Length: 111
Image: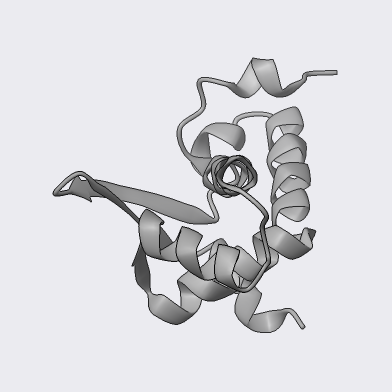
């Protein structure tokens, strides 16, 4: 059974469609991403803003006590990027921006 290291070089959802194992892995990853309460809240904030800087998103999440520190933020953001739920945009003036992807828009339909 393949594990995440078998898919580490995959860059798009289409790459995972090459095998049933890849589809299953992506589906599992996606479900873990959108069903986690912290990641779901991150998706909600990004979806509401459309596009948000890392600094502003971190400030919002810390202020509402959704996360406790920056390492927790980084872990969950990396997970959402890996699951294709958010897109990392080009850095503008040394600032990172995030936007919701089509996969991440499922948050509109979750309670």
